[in-house]
Image (cartoon, rainbow, N blue to C red; front, side, top):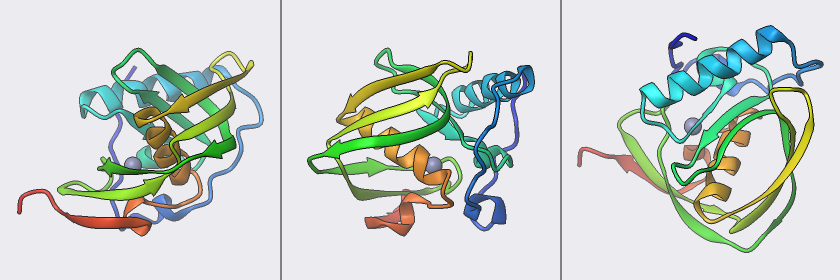
Length: 153
Ligand code: ZN
């Protein structure tokens, strides 16, 4: 495994609509492992592939409450409710903000073995899912933030 460089706001790869992964291969699994290691190195709770310069539909999540996911081609199939989230992004360092997000989402994806999985997420985990999957469509949380500013002020 290896720690990859995180691309930051202004890098065009963060604005790409990422391509679906046609097949979960060993090289895809290696990228997922690297993403998880890179996320842990930066104390993140989620990381999307474009953040390490790969415009493919992959994300990793660890909400630090026991929910760890390596997701390929994730989609939100249902959402409900509303919450105002506290968010930051490893690709937008030095800033934080709040977004309006669903309270509950249902997610469908492939896991690292290429098997179809689905799970339900609520609260903070729902926020992480929405944030990471937005990355796969070239969207940063600051685009939809209801509050956004420097963390050092
Ligand atoms: Zn982010």
